[in-house]
Length: 303
Ligand SMILES: NCc1[nH]cc(CCC(=O)O)c1CC(=O)O
Image 1 (tube, rainbow, N blue to C red):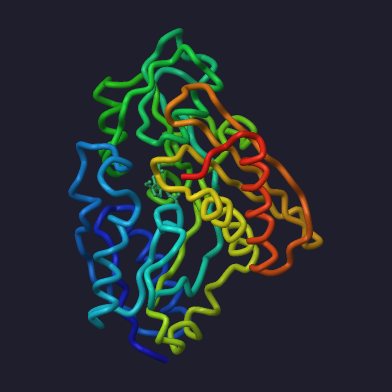
Image 2 (image 1 turned 45 degrees about the vertical axis):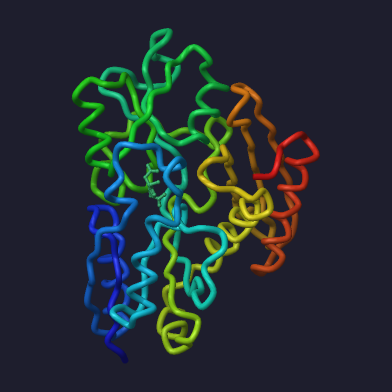
């Protein structure tokens, strides 16, 4: 049994996630401590994430803590973890996934279909923007940044008729009652890794890899490995509207769906879909790479 220090951001969602991992590790007999820190991503609330350097902003400070030995593991929303980790770091565990889908949140409207013509919908996600445009070209999509509580407050202040958020974050924070409808993947295909937690360690800490092994959910890992492979093969970043969602059909079969939107040309959307056997992470990644190849064959451009 060991003493494990978890590096975490200090948003309510990040703390929930770190505490969740703490509880799971304590059940395994370890003693656990949280080390909270503010990342550059948390400080930048006024600009779109894609314009200021992307996902890495949420991860770097935590990696520094691992590098300097101030912490042992970092807990991340996998959606925010870049496809390629820096040299010397690895993804040591992927936990069982929460609902991967997006949620429609609105004070006065039950469904996207019920919004009046030209209504204002808040999101800063390019993926959500292009998928919303495909469903409802008449809507006005306006930027919406900040942590979950901030986004909900801006909705309640009347700046938007509705907003779109990951269902997982709302559920984890006990805010599921704010969800009016959950989008089916056919309508709004989720982002790679959405709803899943990943744990990062220094690659020279096999002791931690072993300690984390009981927390791993291999089905989730296969699914998100395929999703992240789509992103990697496309050169995806948060400046590329890209969705990748994989379901486990049983008997080793994965169903992969991906969608790419043109950030410059509103309305352009390419979709790809395939089902095949993939019983390990390498095979799952190959399926994701194949889905990306099909997106490109359909006109998607690499980032
Ligand atoms: N980009 C921010 C972010 N990162 C992870 C989640 C939600 C929880 C998850 O996907 O695990 C969110 C909020 C959102 O997209 O609404």
